[in-house]
Amino acid sequence: FFLSTAMTTKLTTEQQRATTVLEEKLVMWKSLLNQPIHNCTQTNFFCFSISPIRREHLPHEEHWVWNQSNAKLCTTMYEGRVGVTIQKFNARKKPKYDQRQPSYKVRPTA
Image (cartoon, rainbow, N blue to C red; front, side, top):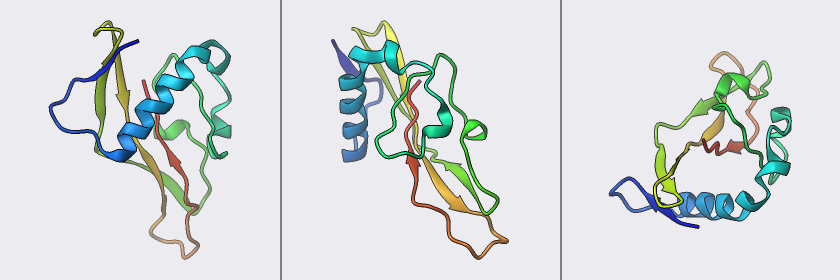
């Protein structure tokens, strides 16, 4: 198993944790494939998907939405044969609402 960054920048602590979790979960990818995405707000939820996960697919409520971070980590695995993109989504309050958003984070990998 080989994971290397395709970027020249150093990985943040959060990106290092995300790649470590990906490495750990990869051995059970078949059992985690296409798990119901509405469970993504549960602590330590993890799934694999054959299609990209977009913020429109994630569950939300009337007073908050998901905000996609601009930072994307592009990596390769298996000596460059598999490309991986790791992104981060945070819950954000809608402007016209006083109610706070939950403190959710989702880190999709593709």
